[in-house]
Structures are given as C-alpha cells and as structure tokens.
Image (cartoon, rainbow, N blue to C red; front, side, top):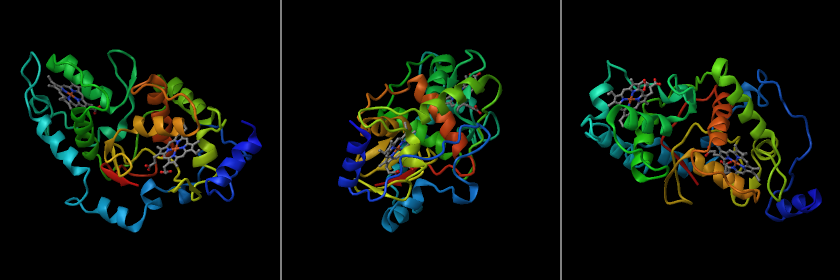
Length: 268
Ligand code: HEC
Ligand code: HEC
C-alpha cells in the first residue's frame, strides 16, 4: 500500500487529520510526550465508561480480581502450597510488585512480565503446571496481582540487565510494519485525540491492563491489546508472551511512568 493510499483509507475511516511525518524522539532519556500532556487511556473514554471504571461494585473487571483473590489462597501443585503460603501483607508482600514489572528474573536472567512471574512461581515454588496465556485463571490472577499496585506509578528498571530489553522495546515501538506501514508512534504519539474507526486514539499506555473491553465482552491482557494493534495495521501479530512484546511492555511502562496503575480498567 502506498503512503497516499494509507492516508486515504484513514481519512475514509473518519480520521480527518492524520500526521505521518514528524520528529521521532529516540533518546531513551527523553520522552516524546511532555509530562504535562501525559494522559491515561481512561481520559479518552466516554463519561459512562469512566463512571463504570470508577465504581468498584459495578466495574466488571472486579469479577476477575475477586476470582484471582480466591485462587491466590488456594493450594495447588505437588508442593500443596498456596500463593498465600509465601506471600502475605507482611512477608514478601505483592503490594506494589506489578508497578516494577517487567523485571529481570535473577535466576534465569530473563525479562519477564507479571503473567510470567505468576507462572514461574507456580512452577518453581508450587510445582504446578503453568497456566496458559489468556486463560481465565491467569487473567484473574494477573488482575488480582496488578490491582495490588493500583494508584502506584510505574517504576520498572530500565538500566543494567534490563537495558538491552528496553532498547529492543523502543525499536519495536518505532518500527513501521504491516501492509499499512505504520508504527506505534504514528497513532499514539502524533495522533492521540483523533478518531479512528469509532475509537478515540489514546496515547497507548498499558497502565490499565488487564482491562475489561466491551468489544471483547471480557477482560484481556496487554498482549491481547498489542496483538489487536498489530492486526490493525495488517501485520502478523506475535504470539502471547512473545519476548518482543515483553520488551515492548518495558518500553511502554517507561513511557507511562508518570501515570499510575489502574487495573482493572474499563475500555470501549
Ligand atoms: C493505526 C493506529 C494504531 C497503531 C499503529 C497502533 N495502535 Fe495501539 N491502539 C489503536 C486504537 C484504535 C486503540 C484503541 C483506542 C485507544 O485506547 O487508543 C489502541 C489501543 C492501544 C493500547 C491500549 C490503551 C488503553 O488505555 O486501553 C495500547 C497499550 C496500545 N494501543 C499500544 C500500541 C503499541 C505498542 C503499538 C505498536 C506496536 C500500537 N498500539 C499501534 C490504534 C493503533
Ligand atoms: C514457596 C513460596 C512461594 C509460593 C508458593 C509462591 N511464591 Fe511468588 N515468590 C516467591 C519468591 C521466593 C519470589 C522471588 C522470586 C523467586 O526467587 O522466585 C516470588 C516472587 C513473586 C512475585 C514478584 C514479587 C516482586 O516484588 O518482584 C509475585 C508477583 C509473585 N511471587 C506471585 C505469586 C503468586 C501469584 C503465587 C501463586 C500462584 C506465588 N507467587 C507463589 C515465593 C513463592
């Protein structure tokens, strides 16, 4: 597809002004969006959707948070241990943990996200089978763990052993791809606030995930959203849990680090 055809199709889809030229901020210490302009996806939702997110009793995401809380204290695996055997409010508390993810696991040296940490604890400490990505149980457990950091700013480490992952994530972010030949920043840095196929484009932050989406009629992981964005530019989406997406997640956490975690958020 030529650039002109891309623009035409976007205009056809209701995007009146779509910027595809500009300056890319490549320095890892310089964020493309000024702190004062940083906005959560929440700010781009309708008043009704925001009201639903704000009400812990009506917010459908809490079905998964509550289920995750129950699973957290259920024994599992050959060791017959629950998460609560090792993690309590005072011992190895998971409060604030999700705000530090993705993070490098000291034993394997791999950069992992919260889903993968939960599965590592199952395998390593419970001798239980890992849960499959996007299964109800892993979504519930992730929603519960991430909710324990609600209100906290992202604080993931991007230097030391994490630095090469951070750079890989940044490179993915700025790489054009798919038949539409668009990169993340074309939509989420240069055109936020514009309408695109019924959605108001946000700045593309991951601080609300797992999130309940009306379009999905369920809660979904950040990787599900990233797959949707890749499909949106007609690129082949990567598998759930792909290292490229975990690296990208670290870059997104850094981009959003003046925002606080909102899980479970509600989206259109
Ligand atoms: C063609 C435009 C387009 C491109 C390119 C695109 N996205 Fe999106 N993205 C959307 C739309 C539309 C939504 C749903 C509305 C919104 O929240 O912005 C969305 C939503 C998101 C969200 C969820 C925001 C929230 O608060 O719920 C994240 C995170 C995100 N995108 C990240 C990315 C990343 C990372 C890339 C590059 C791999 C990317 N997007 C590429 C259009 C795009
Ligand atoms: C036998 C003890 C044990 C059990 C059971 C256990 N964990 Fe862990 N957990 C740990 C240890 C130890 C760590 C530090 C990383 C490591 O050494 O594996 C950890 C790390 C974590 C972290 C990251 C904390 C941080 O600050 O980085 C999370 C989140 C977590 N566990 C969640 C869970 C969940 C969810 C379960 C149940 C599915 C669980 N854990 C079961 C011992 C346990």
